[in-house]
Every structure is written in C-alpha cells, then in structure tokens.
Image (cartoon, rainbow, N blue to C red; front, side, top):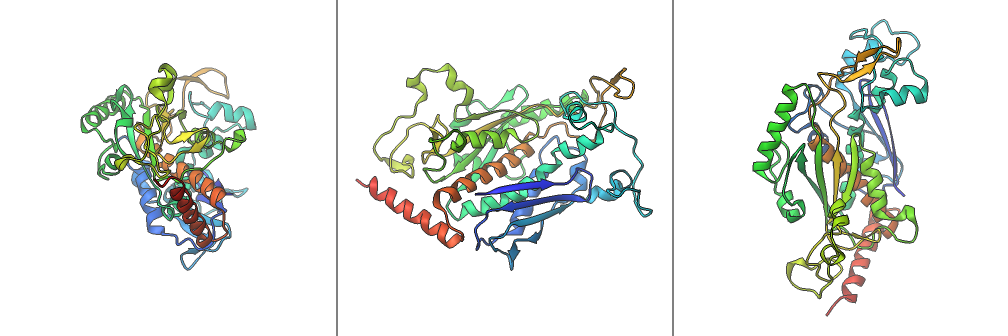
Length: 400
C-alpha cells in the first residue's frame, strides 16, 4: 500500500524521499511539514548542528497545486551545512574547483555503539565516513516529512498523534499510562523536553547537564499516543500483517532505539492476567470507545491480536545514549589495529525528544498504510467515504 525510500548523506547536498501510495486528492500543507521538521530539531540536549539547519521540504513530484495526484511524491530537504562540506563530500570523481569547506581526513577509529565498525566490515570501506554519513540520524528528517503527509491523511479520518518524554536516564515519569491523550496534547510547545511532569523534567535536565559536563551522553524513553484510531486496522491472520509487529519494526528502525513496548509493555510479563487484561463493559460515559463499548483500562495499548480495538494506541520507544562521546571510549585505528580513542563527530548529548518526533512520524506512516489497506480507494474521496460507511455500520451494530 504505502511505501517510502530515502536517500542522502548527513553532510551531502540534502535528503531525498519518495513516498508512494498516497491517494489522489489529499491537500498537503507544507507549512505543517515544516512545523514537524522544526520539532525534530528541538529538545534540550541537542547539538550545534540544529542551530545551523533550518529544514524545509520541497516537492519535486506527485503534488500539483498543493494536492496529491496519486503519483509517487518526491521530496527534497536541502542540507544548509553542505557549503562547509563540499571538499569532503563531493560526489564527482574529482573534487570540483569551486568546492568549499575543509579537506577532512579519513575517519579510521570506529565508535562503540555506532554502525562504524559493522559498516566497514559489511561494505569493505577504508574510510568510516562512507558509513557514518548515511547511518547518521540526519536521515530521519526525511522520515518526519513523509510522516507529516501520512499524519495529514490520518487527520481526514479523525486521528491525531502526540508524544511525550517518559524518562531520561534514571529519571522517569511515575505512570505514563495514567496520563491521558488530552494531558499529553496539552504539553506546551516550548517545554525543554516535552515532558508532562514538570518536576521530572527538571530532574531530567539536570541529568543531561551532568552528562554534558562529563563528556558523556544520555538516553531515555518516550511514548507515542494515537487518538481516535479506527478499530480494525491490521490483522491477526498472518504474522506480517499484525499491526503491533509493523509498529515495532517501524520504531526499531529509528537510530538508537533498542526496545519497544505497547501499552504496559514489559510490565505485562510480571502481572497476572486478572490485572493486565482490559475488561469489556457496556457503553457508559466518556470512556466509551469507537467500537461502542467501555474499557476501564488500556493496558493493551489499543492493540489486541495485532488489530486496533478503538482505544488510544500507545507505544513506547527506548533509546540508548548517543554513540559519540566527547570523552571517547577505547577503540582501535583500522589502519594500524592499535588501540586508540574512538573518533569524535559533532553530536548531541541527548536526543530523546527528537526521537519521539521521529517515532510520531513512523507511527503515522504505519497507521496510514493500515488505513489505506482497510478502507481502500485511489482517491481521498473514496477512502473517506469507505471509512464513514464503516463507522456507521459499527455504530449500528453496537447501538443499544
């Protein structure tokens, strides 16, 4: 249904993304894409690169007069820092005479925790820059642009997606599932870490400051909440159609994400069934879900059997600390095989808030794909009509 590819390097001319499968007739708000790209650049603990770039996506195809045509959508996001890297990152066989920037030496000391060593072994490179430029999280800017288009499609179906930071290092919000969608939606856009708990956020900032002072980095976790998700997305009939598996793969593909939890996540393994499964009760009050029943709890995170059940979809990503340390760990020099400190690249101290924005984009992409799969249609008119008919049938089935 939906698929995308990205291309480009961290310090190359820019990033390219091709998104295929968006129905015709979706009005695309490029200012809204810019808002999402700017959100990705924010968050306490980001590095100097974020002060250089001012990301904006330009449509190269698939959009006419601001509306999708049904053809693949091609996007280009320029790298403003390219002017400082032309003498290092030129693509021609010979360095162009007009190239600007510095002649940087080859990178030969792999960073523990990065793709550096695995990449040179896999592809046979001598210069680790051939690995790190593509393995860089800079690529996620293209995903955020793609996810913003998917988010705009979901908006036509009434679905909204938000996120919040749950933990930084040892500091954590006590019970993330106790926070409602409305509370997370209400977090101010200027909060340093986009955390719903002001006290916890202050302690998180202190952890990031301590890591920066020590030349270290910090990881953490975030939760993405999708509200008013149509029930029935995904399927239980084949392993690769289960929506929880598709969401897990999408989040695990984000750089530095090492684990994913849905609903209660790993805690579900430590509780008896009587305390983890969400009871199903007759309709009552504001907690009535879109399928016409009441679920007093949402420990399942909106997914049962790989299918959305009408409750808020809640998924948590766990991010390891950034691999580049200002006080580097031990490594080797690939040219001599002698012990040497790992290479230092310009980097962040903490990028958990940014990873949450990328995760929103990936969740939006997966949900949009599942919605197109469920409701069909080559145009937005068909898709929305099919969704509305499904809602009416479901409402009639559960009417009292």
